Length: 155
Image 1 (cartoon, rainbow, N blue to C red):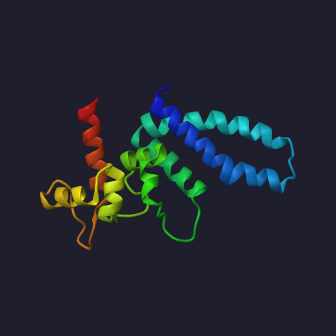
Image 2: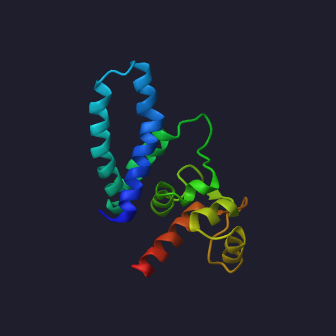
């Protein structure tokens, strides 16, 4: 397993522990059945990370959307803080899906997804290297496509 995959697995496990398993353990008053769930989740997290990173587009999209909707529930649209896009999960979501719930993103979000400044996004958009959205910001899919192209050039 690559270091990037190991970091993604570790982030998934931390999120699942904090958001799902720990509260469930409190609700069931420490029932030992939770321990077996932890083992299942550990195995599954490796599988999910492998699919997110190396699975076909449809499989990766499915795992990512399930993970986001389960780990970040809410009544409003998914709107993580800018720093989230720099995490292992944020980076794989940006590369494989773009923004999972938005057709366009602000220059600040696009910059976080790309690992550059807001001004860098503005410059890319002004030079026609990143498609603008007619209602403002840039297209989420354009950010994803740029990340995919950059990944291909680095490989």
